[in-house]
Image 1 (cartoon, helix red, strand yellow):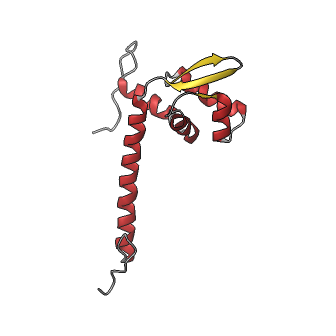
Image 2 (image 1 turned 135 degrees about the vertical axis):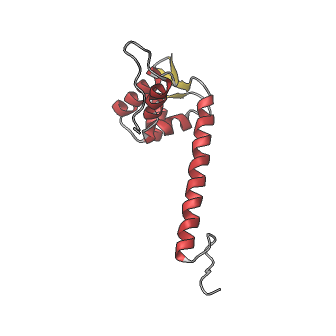
Image 3 (image 1 turned 30 degrees about the horizontal axis):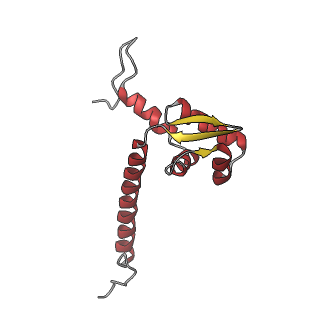
Length: 129
C-alpha cells in the first residue's frame, strides 16, 4: 500500500487539493495572517498596514501583491494612497476556525503537561492528594 497522492492525467486541471494547498501556503506567513486581521474592520492604506506590521515598504508590498493576485484582497487608489480590503469576508470565518482549533490544541497540551507534572490546569497541586 502506498501513501502517494493520485496524480492527475496529463492535461487535467489542477485537483482541488492542490489548489487548497496553494491557498494555505499563501497564508503560511504570519505577516499575511496579520494583514487579514488588520483588514477585519475595513480597508486600510498601505502605510497604515506597513506601520502595524513593522515591515519595510518592499516587504509589505510583496505580501499585499501576493494576496491580491491570489484573490484574497482588492485594492483601490484614493489620491496618493493605495487602500486594501478583503475581497471575501468568509476568510474571517476561516481564521476564527483556525483560532478555535489552535486554542483547543493548546488547552489539550496544557492539560497533558499538568497531568505529567501532577498539577491540575488551574495550578493546584494534585500529588499526594
